[in-house]
Structure formats: structure tokens, C-alpha cells
Image 1 (cartoon, rainbow, N blue to C red):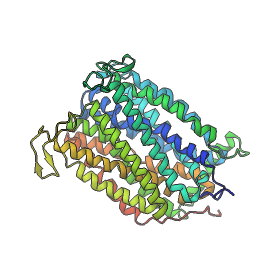
Image 2 (image 1 turned 90 degrees about the vertical axis):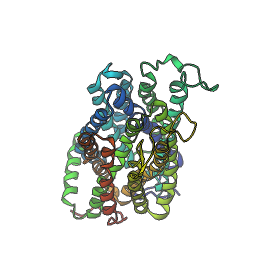
Image 3 (image 1 turned 180 degrees about the horizontal axis):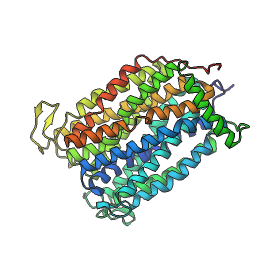
Image 4 (image 1 turned 180 degrees about the vertical axis):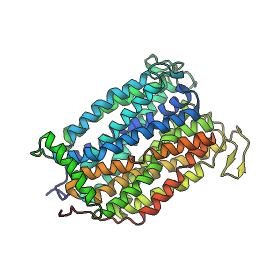
Length: 468
């Protein structure tokens, strides 16, 4: 007899839930290569040509996409609950993402190619489609994962996502970034496939790479992961009933008070976690002057750390509960952010002055003590943040009423995006006002602290649908 899932239905076979986890392997490298470590710093420092202005523009761009996601995600989730199936929705979102990601290849330095603002428009479109796909993908978890393994499977998915990004970054480093810059026998003499480093093609190539990667590795989800059953509702009826269901849920907010508290807490701390991810590479590029190779190495190691953290976090989640894992993740990240922004080219921990540019070892990368400490600090960042993402998703699966799981994951997306404009706006505003990337990134500490305090009062218990 099959093990039961959180929803009370028989869980999927291992091929089914592992294919579900593999979708993160397909999708998350976009975040790692484009949003964090390669394309975003390239956009800020090379397309815009001004790291401070570029960070501000990215902040406002993420604010716009966050607002649009928050506006639409809960309704899409409710409609999907009425229609029964989730994979057709995911297919539509992926089909839109793939060509949009590919087009980033045409974003050239100094605002050439498609230009700065069309590039930002593509980033907004991709972010919306990415988050919509996450709503429906996350909503599959409660019905496919065995109850005893839900934390581990959620952690496995994020671990695979980070490992996929790591492998692609290693390939970019080997094939495109290092050739012609180092005299190492195992590195090609020139970039593969004739890529031109002067035209920044080693940075732009991550668009087509991640688009093709998504196309290939999303297939197992569609082929092997079981989906919900079609209902008797037509599309029009599903839309109508879905909208009514959202209104019914809103009216029953007192019944769902624990879930509501969790969603508000998650809304706040998730802003902080996402903000750190979005701007850590941009911050390093502007503060320490890290080039594409440095950022690739940085991203590769950090992705490995994140994968390790996801696996460890999944074990902690299954053994001690999602709430404990989330609290550890938020608290640890807040402390690490305090330490991270204390590291500057001329100072450590706010009080210790160092001579800028003095190397502490012979490596051509991360040569100074502040750089080394920032690098190491970020490895812990990667671990704690990934635990936070994985266990926050598992927490939602544990406390959602089974009948409304996609709607509640739509609300979960809302909680991740309703104020998703806040973290980018905070970073953008404080960066512009103080003309300091340090001040911009430090503004996220408050979000983590508030989210941590609120999580203390959340109960880890499954809600039921009220009789109304």
C-alpha cells in the first residue's frame, strides 16, 4: 500500500516525486545565473555602466514584478483548485519563460542591443511567469510527497536547483570566462563556440543556456509526476468558482488566523531573504570590484553550500518540524547579514581598519582579507537562506487545508510578493539616498528581525475548511 501524503491521498511513486523535485533543477539555474551571479551584475556594471544606478534600477524592476504577482497569484491558484489539474498551467508559464530568457542574449553593453528598458521588461515578464509556475508546482507537493518525507523532498528540490546552477556556472567559467585570461593547461586557449569576450558574450550566453536547460529538464515533471484529476467545471466555471472561493476564504480569515499569521510573517522575512539573493552579487561586484570570473567562482561555491544547506535543512525539517527549521534559517541569516555589510575594502566588523588592496594570499581572486571573509560569510548565507525557502514551503504544505491547497499556495505566492516590492524599494531607496550599496543591503536586516518575531507565534498545525 502506498504511503499517504499530507493531503490524505496515496503519495506518488518515487519517480513521480523525484521528477517533481527535478523541476527545480530545470528552473532555478535561471535565478542563480541570471538574477544573482552573472547577468544581474553584468546588467548593473556593464549595460547600465554604474553599479549604484544599476542596483537601483533592478530594485524598482523587482518591485514592479512583485506587485503584479501579488495581484494575480491567489486568483490563479483558486481557479486551478477548481479545474483540478496543475501541469497544463505550468506548461503555459514555461512556454512563455523560455523565449523571454533566450532574448537576454541580445542585451548588450552600454545599453546596446535591445536596450536597458526592454531588458528590464523581459526581467519583469520572466519573474511573473517564474512565480506563477512556482504556485502550481508548490501546490503539487502535499499530494505527491509521503508525509514522512515532505521536508526532505522539498529540500531535495532546492538542492537540485542549486546543483544545476552550479554545473552551469562551472561550464561558463571553463568554456567562456577563463579562456584567454589564464595560462592553465586544462583551460581552452579561447572561448568555445567562438564567443567574444570583448562583446560580453560570456555574460550574455547565460540567457540562451538557461532557456535551453529549462526546456530539456522540465520534461520529466510533465511525463512522470501525477497530476490532479479534471473536474466537471468548464474554464469559465472554474474562473467564476475560483474567484468566489477566494472571497469565501477572505471572509473566513478568522478561521484561518494561524495561516494568516504565518503568511504575514513569511511575507516579511521572505522579502529579506529574496533581497539578499538578488543583491549579494551586485553588492560584491560594486563593493569589491569582482569581475565575471570572480562572480562565477563565488556563485559556484555558494550554490554548492546552498545545496548542502537544503539537504541538511530537509532532515532538520522532518525531524524537528518546519517551524524550527524556519526560525533557525531566519535568525542565522539576520546575523550573517549584519556581519556581511560590515565587510568593506578598508574595514572589517565596522571597527577594524585594514589597508585596501593588501593581498593575504597569492590567488588572483578574493585576495584581500575583507573579500575572503565576505566570501566565507556568503557560504553560510547560502545554507541558511536555502533552508528558509525549503522549510517555508514545507510549512505551508503542512498547515494548508487539503481541499484548497493551490489557492493557499497562491496566497503563499502573494505572501512572497505582496510586499516583494518592499525589499527592492528599500534597497533602491537607501542605495540612492546614502549613495551606498552597503546602506542599501543593510536595510534588509529589519525585515528578517520582524519576520522572526512573528514566526515565534505561528503554530504548526493543519487548517480545515470551515462549514460556511
